[in-house]
Length: 224
Image 1: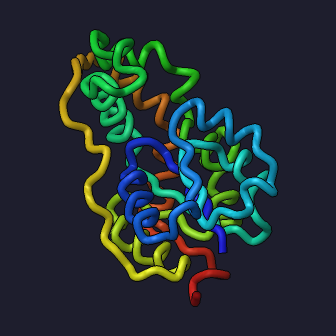
Image 2: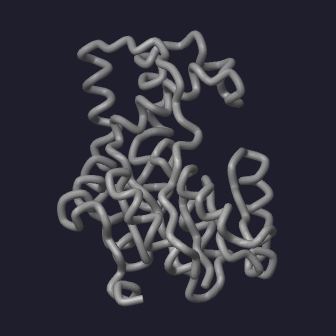
């Protein structure tokens, strides 16, 4: 079986990836982390991706689907979108080794939200499904993903993915943790912008958090 883990930033996904990678044989994991790796992945053919037991990282569903083995199982983890953006901002603005730190260290959260509207709007919907609305994205996730979890259910997500890969279950540790807090300047205008940018992603998150109790497993995989 091949696992395709589509990793939304700041969802606990790197800790999950690290736990799985430690348990898998060396050379069986393809990690897509930075922009160079994303470009390299976009240039790969399906035959080059097929040898890997797990492909994990910051790529889109459509990019991975075009390169995955037939029958590969897609998985992802969701987090409340507002909390995720706050964590992402703090991470970029306080971690000195982050590739975007230089452009974020002197910026406030209000600037981040005001300047990144097109990039941030429905970000989860677009990365995970290629769709712009939750109404369109939810059926794609429920029909094409083997598992969609939330950060609150991360240990359960980990257990199921380890099981599918034939590994002894492990609880993910804390990896890639945001260490500090940036300039959290908030105004009523910023709050309105933030709620508008996250509107579709909040609908997506709430669907899986409430309708599936934070852990959706496709019916074809539920007994495996």
